[in-house]
Length: 172
Image 1: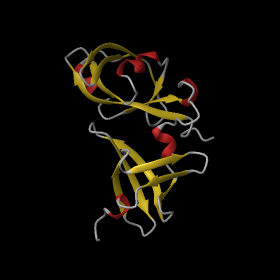
Image 2: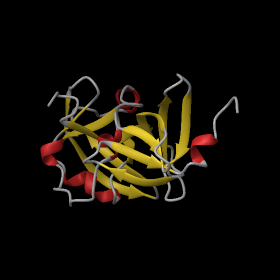
Image 3: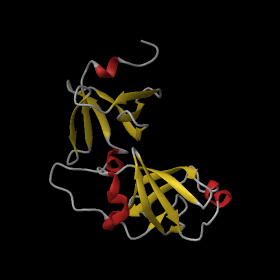
Image 4: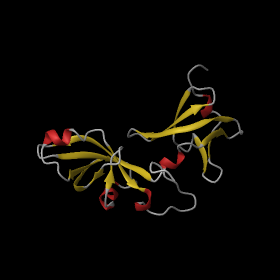
């Protein structure tokens, strides 16, 4: 398994908080405080990050990054994603998966028609969005909801979407 597949993104640093080097983190974990349970983080390039959560604020965590003590230093961290090793994550049940596991899966309609391949899973705060590269080359963005996604079959490496959902794309 490649190094990238062995890591899972669990949050993103959004903005500095105050003048003493604290940052706000948008967690991608099921419960916000879970991020504090991880022993170590890495950024996109694999640089080790040690941080401690100091507070929770609505949809964000306030954290202290080791070695960062003033706002200008904290500003340099804005936009960085926080990754943990897959081995640090809880074990999954038989029908569970991490969103990162969906990338690369084939997408087909409930009628069995091929649609494309999952390129990414986004969450901008209002729920998940599947980014699908269609077989014809165009991009399809779909809500990751029970109305749109009929099934995720990790064994067969596929995501099944409703036939109606596959029709929502530019040009038709």
